[in-house]
Amino acid sequence: MKRKSVLKLSFALAMSAVLLVGGWLASAGQGEVRADSTPLPGVAGKYNVFVLGDLKGYHSDSEGRMAAGGNITLTQGGYSVGHSLSAAEISEMDSLVAGGNLSYEMGEVNGNAVYGGTYTGSGKPRGGTGTLRKETNVINFVSEFALLRAKSQELAALTVNGKTEDNYGNIKLTGTDPVLNVFSVSGSTLTAANELRITAPEGSTAIVNIDGTSVTFKNGNGLTGVSQNKVLYNFPQATALRLESIGVMGTVLAPNAAITFNNGQINGSMIGASLEGSGEFHHKPYTGRDNGTPVTPTATPTPVPTSTATPEPTTAPTSTPTAAPTSTPTPVPTTAATPTPTSGTPATEPPAATPTSDTSTAAPTSGVTPAPTVPATALPTSVVAIPGGTPLTPAGPTVIGTIVTDDELAIDDNPVPLGPGASATAAAAGVTVPQATPVPSPTAGPGPDDEIILDDEIPLGGVTDPGTTAAAAATLPQTGESSPAPYYITGLTLAALGLLLSRTRTGKRKS
Image (cartoon, rainbow, N blue to C red; front, top):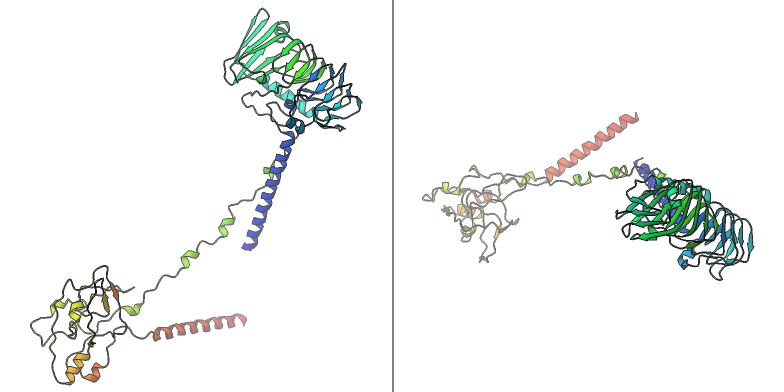
C-alpha cells in the first residue's frame, strides 16, 4: 500500500510539473505576440497612430505604424506609412491595420497592410517588405481602449509635484524631480495659450494632465532638459481635441476624443477615439514611466499556470527508512576470554610478595621456569586488554606470547620449554630445582607504542609444584579457554526448541 501511495504521489507531481511548464511556455509564447514593451497598456504604444473609430489622412505621412478599428481613408496625394520602421519592427507586427474598409488612394506601406472589410486604391506595401491581405479581428480595439481609458484616469489621479505658471499666454511648467514630474493645466488656459514649455531634469518623465471636454492645443510647444520620448499629454475628459499649427513634443493620450489635427506634427504617438487631418506623425515611441504603476499588459488574459493544485511535496520523503543504520550489530564481547587463575594465588598479587631469600619455597605461580631469555622480556606491570572483560594484571613476570618492539632483539634458537615441562623432569629425577624469582625491571617491557602478538602455539596455564609427577605434569590445567562446543550445542538446542514451538503454534491455529 505504501508503494502504491508513493507511485500515485510521484505521478501527481510529474503531471503538475508538466502543467506548470506547459502553462509557462504558453504564456511566454503569447507574450511574444502581445508583449507590453512600452509604458502604455496593450499594443497602443507600438503604433504612431492608434484610433478606436475612423481615421482620415490627407497628403501626409506616418513614420510609424497606423491602426484604426473603423475605416481608414488615405487620400489627396501619396500617403506614406511606416517608412522609419526597422526590419525588426516590420517583422514584429503589421504596419497598417484597418478594422473596417481600407481606401488607400496612392502611396506605400513599409510592411504588411491588413483590412477587415473592403480595399480600394493603388496604395500597397512596398515591394519585398510585406503583403496586402484581408483579415478580421487582428486587434481587439474595444478591449484595448478599455485599458487606455483606465490608464488615462490613473494618470489623472497622480499627485502634482510640478509648478505651473501662466505668463500672459505663455505656460511654463517646471519640475525638479529626477524621476517623475506631474503637472496640471486647465483646458481653457491651454486653449488660449501661445506656448507651452516644460522644464524638467534630463531622463525624467513628465505627465501633463489637462482637464476639460473641448480643448485646443496650438502654436508653440518646447522642452528643456526632458526628452520628447518621456513626455505625455493626458486628456482624460476631452471628447473633442483640436491640434493645429503646432509641433507637439510628446505623446497625446485622448482615448475619448474626436481629434482634428491639421498643419502640424507630433513627435510621439497619437491615441484618440477618431482622427482626421493632414498632420504628420513622427516615430518617437513613448518610453516614460509613472513610478511603475502596474497596468494589465494586454487585453487578452494570460493563463495563470499556478492555478493547478500542487500536491504536498513533503509527504514523499517520510517513506524513506532512516532506521537502517541502527541495525549494525554491536560486537559482543567473548566471555570465554576472561582468564581464570590457575592457582590459589590471587592474580593481582604483586610478584614482590615472594621472598627472594628463600629459594626452596618460592611460589610456583609467581615465577617462571628458569630460562635464560625469559627474565629479559618479562614485565609484571604490562596489562593486556581483553574485549568485554576486566583488564588483568599478570601475576609475576609470566609472559605468554611474543613482545615485538621497534628494536631488534637477539633470539636464542635453542628451544627452551616453558611452563611445567622443566619441573616435571626434575621431579621425575628426584631433584628439587630451586626457582629464583626474577626482579622486575621497569624498562624491560614493551612501551606504549609496542605491539603485542599473542602466540597460540604456546599452551596457557600455570606452573606445577615441584613434587608433581611427569604424568600429572603432562596434563595442563584449564585456563578458561575451553572448547566452544558447548556454546554451539546450546545455540542449536535453542534453535530446535524455537522451531518446535513455532510448529506447535501453527498446528493449534489450523485445528
